[in-house]
Length: 231
Ligand SMILES: C[S@@+](CC[C@H](N)C(=O)[O-])C[C@H]1O[C@@H](n2cnc3c(N)ncnc32)[C@H](O)[C@@H]1O
View 1 (cartoon, rainbow, N blue to C red):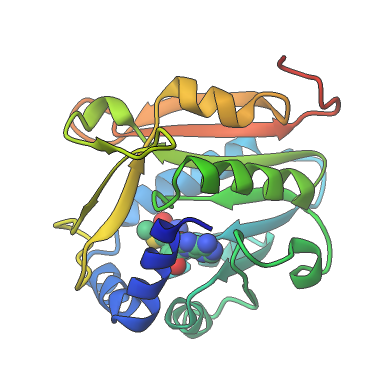
View 2 (view 1 turned 90 degrees about the vertical axis):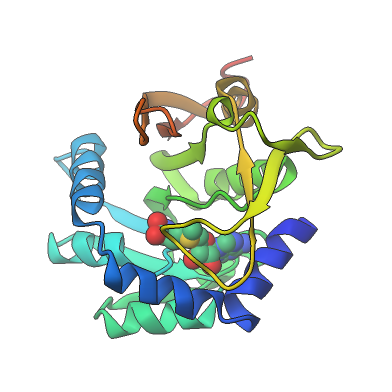
């Protein structure tokens, strides 16, 4: 885990960041965004079988709540206790404390998933992201899907660059305030190709968010059968 992800988790856990984030979520429930994401998930999921969904870094747990209400077998997770408590408060039935960069997936979850979701976790540098892709590959059943979004480096010309090539900055977002600055990483489509290739095929890709609808890269990926795929 990078020092940046450590800082993020420390800020959320020990410096009141998660509590503040949850407060903001209550003030601004972002209903339309969540409805859009729920519909996206339903669109990409196979209709003909019961699927097991695991969400990483669920935060306040809104997506998992909606999936549970729709009847899906969904497990939310997070590394931060305050977020897990909020997920419990919201009534999510299956919840795991899980740090996807440090904990062993197979020790924490009872079985592999048909869909893993990592939504709005921009606190990972290039090396953390590579690790996440390996963990998700291992955590999925054959043909399993991975939904992930990344902040788009194209709209962050102000970003600085880490020695490992990650574009980043530390800041407080106006609409998601925390008491301290958080680490945000920004990626290009070429960066994402680097994480994905060999491990996943692309099922769907689009950009969304912001005036020009390009703040985020959104992808649904399918676990590749053959590890040499995409070379
Ligand atoms: C910006 S919040 C987004 C939460 C939620 N997915 C959403 O869209 O509202 C990022 C979340 O990722 C979690 N997170 C960051 N690093 C993590 C890690 N290594 N393992 C597990 N969760 C992590 C944080 O605790 C936080 O809940």
